[in-house]
Amino acid sequence: MADETTNEKHLLKETAALLGAEWTDPTLTREHWELPDGSTISTLRWLDAEPEIVMLHGGGQNAHTWDAVGLLLGRPFVAIDLPGHGHSSWREDKEYWPFTSAESIAIVLDRMGLDDIALVGMSMGGLTAIHLAAIRPDMFSRVVVVDVTPSQMEQMKKMSEADKGTVALTSGPERYESLQAMIDATAALAPNRPALLIERGVVHNSKQFDDGQWGWRYDSLRRPEGQELTEEQQKEQELSFTQLWDDVEAINVPIMLVRGGASVFVPSEHSDEFAKRAKDFRFEIVDGAGHSVQSDRPAELAALLTDYLS
Image 1 (cartoon, rainbow, N blue to C red):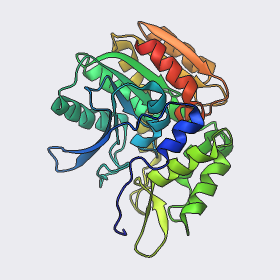
Image 2 (cartoon, rainbow, N blue to C red):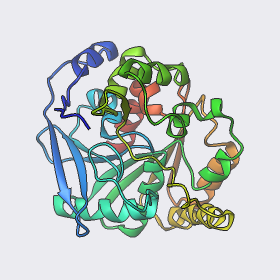
Image 3 (cartoon, rainbow, N blue to C red):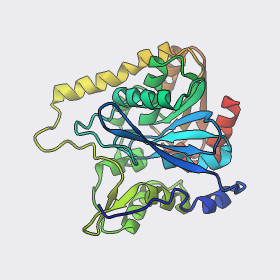
């Protein structure tokens, strides 16, 4: 990969202007935490104060997906690059699932000395948040899950490529001729998202290789030829996700599920199941938002978080 430096605030001031948020030039601090197996988890702290919220992004995203929400929240938080994403290490076994990721993140949060903190997760980050809150009930005060339920794998089998939105990029090309080609590919799948937010999102989620081509800043979920999962293994994997419903029942703090109004990832029967399982539940729909609510309607999501976490 070509040598590079990362500008954590790329187009951030312009994003604040787009959102009508006051520009305060927030402090962003990148940190790297080594795990016992030698891999690293990268975190991005917003503001200098002790974090009040932990943010977990979805599959194929990174910590910067929360930037627009962060500008509107004005509260200290830490956004985490899940394993295999952003600036965190890639895994040889490609086990980028809620269970393994939750265990890694718990280690990092312990080292940061965080407890009694709110936890927000979107898509794969939402499933990770569910498991994390279940295995570490001492650590979190409230949980917010954005546009996902433990029945996600079952639901995705019923969805078209158009239904998946930008999630479809994870199964698309791994290399592009230019950064602009990546921006164009994303824009085609995110009709509800402002062009500025698409550009800055792609810049933070891309890297250029030595041959001049560009690719995503996350590991491919595709297994090498000869290592594909058997049909039985795929069924076991799907079953393991549905076991997260038991984690929903185990969570003893308030939990809010947020669905994108234009998304089909969370059908009514799955949100109803969430309501039955959760002990202290709130359900909200953000009109006009696709799966990535934080990118499509950051102001509305920030308002919900401010109300729920205050």
